[in-house]
Image (cartoon, rainbow, N blue to C red; front, top):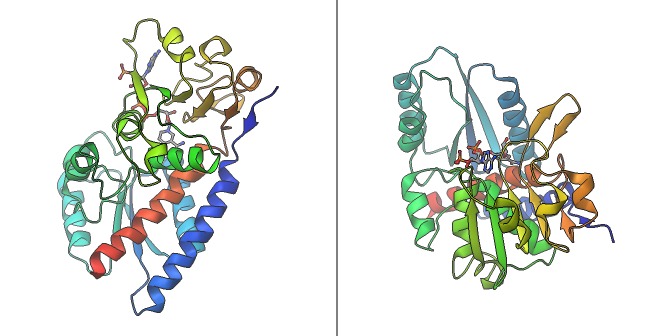
Length: 292
Ligand code: NAP
């Protein structure tokens, strides 16, 4: 039987409707609307699309947003000054520096300079540390979007075997950390997994992947995950976004996986929309933190 397709666009619409109501409730008691400021350095076309989508999504739920466009030849110091100004601006709830930054900029230095209470991407070491201790402030957008997807698709992780391929700070590592915790923002059923985190040095990767009840691919290689790497009935979450001559494809061979998986996310229209949605959730949370 073909896998069910997890519709990330529809799930995002559902969650955004809930966030819109929560924003309205927050404003109704006298607070200013939450405000997200995105910093875009240079002219990278993909980054421009991502930032535009985030602005449109913010507008849909009643979150104000601003885009700060910075010249591609800017220095680390230029960016640090801008981040410092945004940290000190009480009208700004959340700050997002769109990655990747040009080579001459020290990305870690810039991300570390964002106030941890405005760090809606959850990249700051303080927020990563809180997450690792199981008491998160903000949850990283893509991994938490995936937990939401599983939750709303009635796929629990407690006691299950999860394989995450890719160990980036943005997706793989926090994903593994979140699912291995004792509890989650959506309850213990959405944590408590036995997680294997795979990477380019993993031996027998196909075997490890094929033993997983939930397989998360965050690699950046088109159609890397083939049918033999999938346990029959497994949930397959494809994070990859690869631009190829055939258009946008994920890290999973979708057509082959469809025949063996129990549930699968498409690319596009899977994980991507959830990432944007969780950014909005985090921006509202940041505004609430500032208002207490
Ligand atoms: P990344 O920083 O590019 O790292 C890739 C990871 O994949 C690394 O850990 C690397 O292992 C591993 N890898 C590469 N080749 C491998 C191989 N042959 N076998 C096993 N592991 C291998 O990853 P990322 O930033 O998480 O991005 C991954 C993909 O997700 C990209 O396509 C990106 O565009 C997409 N993405 C999508 C969203 C979304 O919202 N949908 C969000 C973020 C990223 P090593 O560590 O050993 O090098």
